[in-house]
Image (tube, rainbow, N blue to C red; front, side):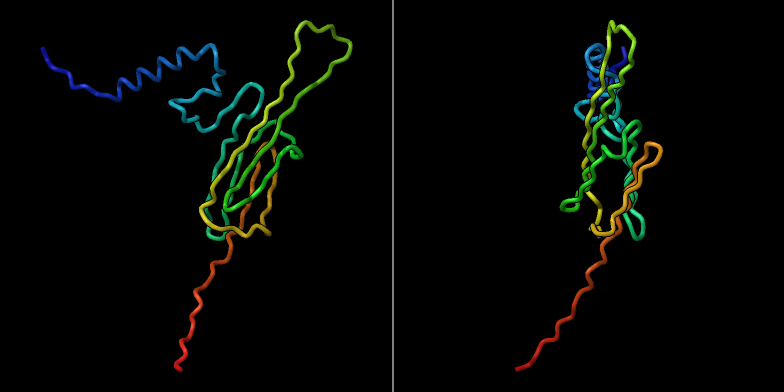
Amino acid sequence: MELERWNPFSELDDMGREIDRLCNGFIPAGRRTFFGAPFPALRSEEGVASAAVDVIDKKDAVVVRAEMPGIDREKIDITIEKNTLAITGTVKKDEEVKGEDYYHRERRHTSFSRKITLPTKVDEKRVKATFRDGLLEVNLPKAEKAEPKKIAVEVK
């Protein structure tokens, strides 16, 4: 009989599969997490739960792109505070169809928030955001680097 080497990570994988199996009927597929760490682009049937984000560090700017399908531009808020970019928004769908006798009707209301720590200081006065086809792009120009100032020492 050959001895098999014990691998603790295989037990963690088994446990993760078991948790997924147990949660299958209770949590929508897009909102599941693996040991508390969310998957990159969390989605739900109601809309965006957490926007998938790309952060690109270019020579003169930091560019943040966030996927936000089905969201109106007016429902997106962007703020910068202490080198952190916060993107928040809401999705509210309540379409009324007249002349129908409803047996069942659902309304969708989802809100989301995403905070991103920026890799460098940015010039907050020159930040620009564009929104097109469900893709938000925030262009954050880098702040000019403070040059070291040489101070002359006087002899008294």
